[in-house]
Length: 293
Image (tube, rainbow, N blue to C red; front, side, top):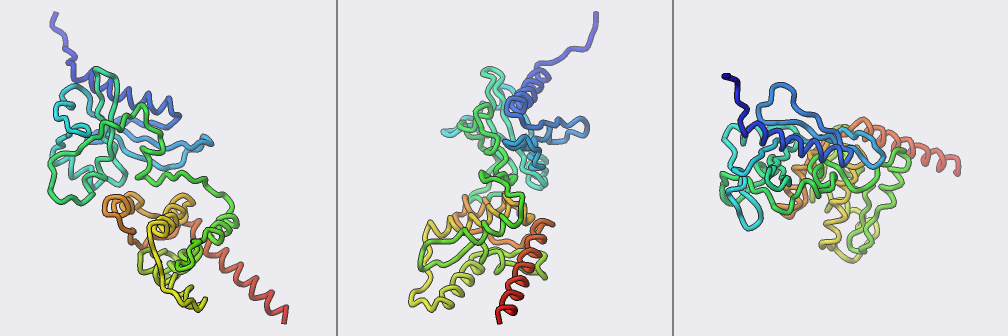
C-alpha cells in the first residue's frame, strides 16, 4: 500500500523541540511553541522567578537537531552556518534568540545567543556562529539563558521607598571616587525627567561635583572596583524595572569591548513614580527647614 513516509528529519526536529520543552518543564519555566508562521523562531521561553512569578522577560528559541549540525567542530564547540536570511532575521529580532543544537545521539543540547553573536563587532566578518560545548542546556541555570533579556541575580524591591533607600545607601567607599547610585540616578535624569542618561561623562561629572563640594585636594581615581560599582547601577535600573534599557546591547560594551555602556533610556512608569517620590521627599525636607526657622 502506498502511504506517506515520515522522514528522519521530522523525528529529529521533534526531539530537539521536546528537549527544550522538557528543560522548561523541569526548571519550571514557560515554553510557548510557535504554532503558525514559523519562519526562523521555533518558540519562546519566559523567565519564571523563584517566587513562581512570570516576569515577562522572554527569549526566542530556534532549535536545530541531528548529527549534521555537529560536523564543524572547534576547540570550544561547534560552528553553525546560518543562511543569510536567518542572519538578517535573528540580528533584527526584538528579543534575544537562543540557537539550540540538539544531539539526538547523546540527548544533550547546546546553546548560544545568536542575536548577540551577530550584533557583537568582530575584527573579521564570520560566516558562522560558534556554539560553546560548555553551554549544555540541560545543565544551565535559567538565569544564564535569560541574562541578555535583563534577568538579574538581585531581588526585586516592591516598595519604591525601599528602592530610594537602596539608591542612597549604595555608595563607593573609595575616597577619590565619592559617588552613590542615587547620584547617578538624579544626575542622569533628562528629557524633563522622562528619560535617564548614562555614560562615563555622567559618571565623571557626578564624581567631580562631589569632590568639589567636599573641597578634596585629590582628583578622581577609578579602577576596576569603581567600574564594577557604576555598572552595578545599570543592573539595578534593569532589576528594579526603572528604565527601558537594551541590556543585551549594554553587555556588548561591558563584556566584549570592556567599556562602560552609553545610552539614553525612557523611564518606565515605575521609574517616573520614583522621580515623583524624590520630588515629594525634597518638598518635605524644604517644609521642615522652613518650620525650623
